[in-house]
Length: 405
Ligand code: AMP
Ligand code: MG
Image (cartoon, rainbow, N blue to C red; front, top):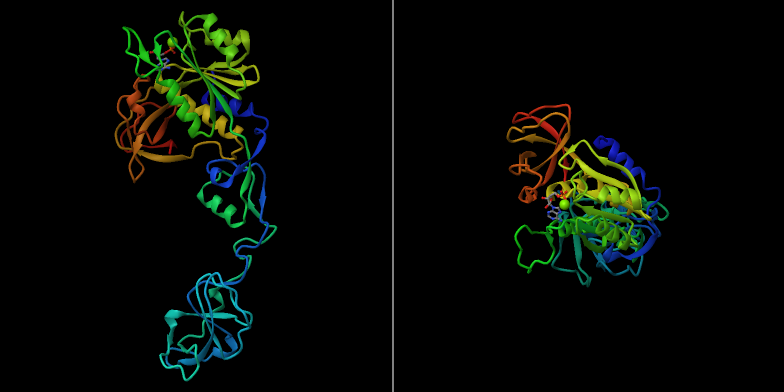
């Protein structure tokens, strides 16, 4: 039986290269990874500009201005954001300037509007005068290239694009971003008992296929594309036929039929049609989990129990999809939580306990943890990691946990 760490390392090690690159419109790039380093093609900001609303001045001519000794200057220009100064600022002049507006030539400081007083009377000087109560500061000038300079590394390859990265790419004027394409995933639900259409009444003994939709949602969330959905009855021929039909996938997931029961055929058919690397991992939930290859695709035979299939997806399939899609960080963040209630745990297997989290990182398990209890996934913010070498944990114990959101 594989340990959790061995299984994860082997699964991630099976990815040699990310998928081929495609150009993605910036508006659709959120959540994607960048395929290559992005270098700044221009300076940001593109020109020196004012950090505040105020007056552009020349330090040499306003050094004496103070709270007590106000210095009156004529206002010779008005420079709103989006305009460009038409002339040089001379000594003894002030230019009304606004946040983000370009600094005129000759100006080396800006006085905040809060440190000034504009005069009503204008002595025949049309634009009026301003009294400075402070000499201003060069620190109020945002220098060209001070955010990022042309030629600098803006975003390293493998970075996940979130709002902040999208903003930087937009500021640089990039409209299409090179990203590894999304992994194509096929899903096969196995089981004679399954009905997939919501409006069909259930016959005795039947249940609805909930793993199919749950896995499809998890794949989308993980950045994958669901390209095929199929169902197979619990007959070796039916599983073999369904496997043969799943083509054009980078990853194939099956659910159910992977254990050792008389009606479990996934493992044997995989061995016949593809390769099986391992099929048992010392974790709870989800001990039976087959990993191998089927044609050109990587194959996961996930357990049928709804909780087990989603938890094993979270632990093993999601990191793989993220790695295929080019993300440097393909694992969920691990945090430390405090148990709000005692946690019973039998040593032997590493257990991943669904729990909700409060604002103080106190974790409360989402009720009984049976692997058929679909309801225990509702409101799960974390998977608390109970170690295989440990027994029960008391309330107040601190444990590692994988953050699911
Ligand atoms: P199996 O691994 O096939 O023995 O299935 C284990 C349990 O999970 C059984 O109770 C199945 O009915 C249930 N199960 C298997 N596949 C699904 C599915 N797609 N949706 C909901 N439950 C399932
Ligand atoms: Mg089954």
